[in-house]
Length: 157
Image (cartoon, rainbow, N blue to C red; front, side):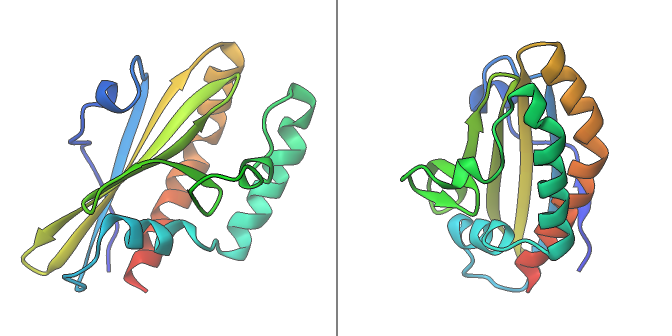
């Protein structure tokens, strides 16, 4: 199954006011009963080994800058999928993410009926707060795109 980068169809400001970055990827899966939470769980419930290693490397690099470690996000007792706290959820849309001192981000997982099954779209929305946030976003964007495609493929099984 092919993951496609698509033009985002959501209003970034309705998800994260003032956001400066948005991108979206989509895949169609044959599962016609797939809801947004189940799709998000397939995407974020487990990560491939190379993604986990990349996140550990990220944590080592950003530690001197005081950025939140990826493991720290998992420790708070809130509704979460993988490392992402769930902000809101409906059967068709789940929004997760968190705020940090350098940037705020949201990941939106939408599901919609499609002729071939269910179309799952993941949209990332980011609001940077300072030079560190803008630099961080510029550095991680190529990795983000690779990881987003990989994680979305996990929805297909």
